[in-house]
Length: 193
Image: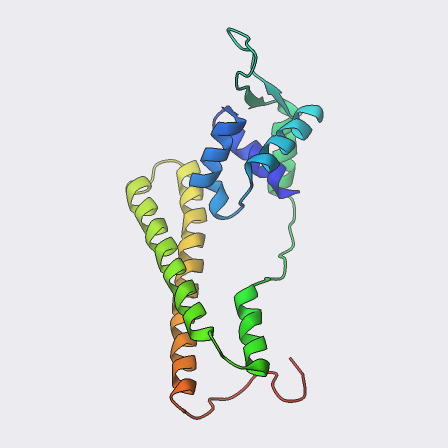
């Protein structure tokens, strides 16, 4: 149920049309909660039906004109209840990590190239987050900016982890390719772990 809450958050920050929301998701919220254009429009309809948002009246109604939405008091109350409630963490599902586990069984062909590709992707994302932090949070102002910066710092921390882990994984795979000795195992052998 988090996409509706992400949309409510974005609309409370600034009333927007569906297209504007999509663009804003691409530049901020979408880094940690991605959504397609279609998903956003579908959720806007549901939120409007639920009485959480409304389309702002247009000065000149015309066919095909984009509707801007704002959050109603019921939507703010829903978001407040959700933000202050409990949320259990979800297990991480990562295809690359699963591929490493599979490679332990079927072989490492192509694994080093895939690790390098992922490393480059995470290095680019880390650089982008660091640039956003430098550009947008040089002088942190109010509590809203401090909380937004914390969200960005979570992204920086995750990307830093992935860069370091991928460097370690690549070094390990390259060592195995060079005939290096085993460095220990986790869950190997009879199918445990």
